[in-house]
Length: 118
Image 1 (cartoon, rainbow, N blue to C red):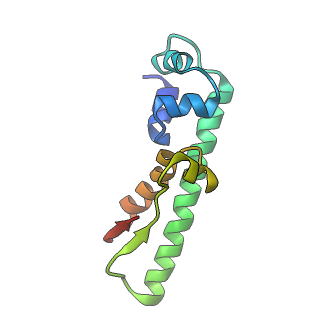
Image 2 (cartoon, one colour; image 1 turned 90 degrees about the vertical axis):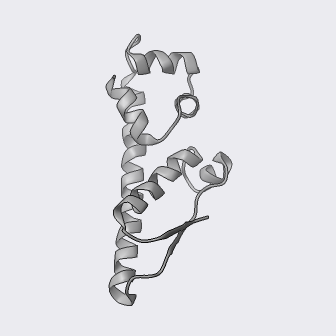
């Protein structure tokens, strides 16, 4: 596995989504993933930036939920909103719905609460 392939998994992007994200052809991206071609440093940095943004967003959400729990007690359920399309995600500042889902996944994994995903 290449470092790029590992970062791609963590980002939540599919290979098709990543190709669109980097504005390259899918076959070029597949060669990066399998190590047949070197990954351009800019592509690695773009994924690192996306993953960092996901982590920051999840951390901010977790801080908000933890503060709410400290003030009001544990809720029966927490509602999280998912993007219903890539266009919806892009309107919220994410390249794809799956990239936004990775933020919610981090929140769900960190908090031991019931979640209503809408």
